[in-house]
Image (tube, rainbow, N blue to C red):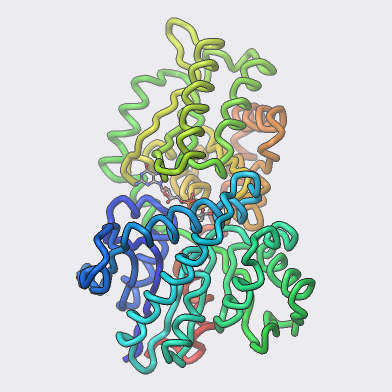
Length: 459
Ligand code: GDG
């Protein structure tokens, strides 16, 4: 029997990682097919025998094999290269990147080391599916270790325009290693186009058509596979007891006011300062909304060891304070900013009763929150989704109110339009959003990717 073998930095063994989009989607895929999941245990250990051991763990038919990292590996590979170089550059924030040659050396070494540990565990017929920007070089490592079977790669974050990618000192090395995969999948057409354009402009690559590309003496499949959610599961979550409870709790505070909701990891890619400014604009430009609307922003802190994230936290605290100071009243808090996490069911309950879902990242590979918001709505009285044109999801969810998140007046207008939209238009837009979210769900995504990686199927 062939198995699906996933490799990603964090796995769903770690409850903290379960809040992330990747873990949610990969977990659904592995539970459906059975299989192996390699990743980091989350532990940092002294260099020695333990740092070279894989820890096994079983959950719902999935076997997890986890490795620890030494302090040097953690800092070089994860903290510095993945999170302080690749993440900002791929999200168009070259200004925030801490370019560091030593970090890249460690990043490359960790990719090779994990590949050497994974390879002996693979069996003939296995299908290897590597995830995300931590492991751009994994196929190269697996091939060096002797693996000849199929290896696919899916990038959960955007792939930037060629000249932005070329700002990475190691861009050529990375591109060459990416071409060692058999299938490279992106979230959106825009990402696929950027990657192919880069290969053509910088590496003498050739677009062979039909999703095939030739570069660095390899022919590979390069396509967009927009990731989906467990749509039916989210409808159930939105109707669970815990969802009802959360809706009731916030309902007591809301009274007759309309709820506008945002849920995002605390990350500079999510456009939170701009969103807060847009909320101020809403109350300035549309005074009729004062006292009538409550904007609730749920933002679990993430990557708090990275300086830029600490600075973002301070900025958001200040901005929320200013907006509430400027516009609030004795009986009204305009912006409720909650820097903590809630359960999936609680979030689903809040989405269900919200009039407006605000999803305004400056850049986002896909963004799953917008799809979850759609699935939580009630057909008889659906809320309105406001979506950034810079989220990968905007290619699919054209019936949202699409905004430029940098244009705070535009976002304020969209919130006002959403609050005043007729039931008929809300329903028309929502039905189309729901249909595509249901049709292109997480199973559709998995099957579409695996159909290219393993045309013969998994048996
Ligand atoms: C990366 C890419 C891409 C959020 N807060 C809580 C919580 N969440 C859940 C959401 C959603 C997930 O986390 C976030 O997914 P996103 O897609 O919005 O964003 P990233 O974490 O940046 O994910 C992204 C994704 O990978 C998948 O490919 O779409 O572009 O950046 O499911 O609901 N979950 C819980 N409590 C919270 O407080 N339980």
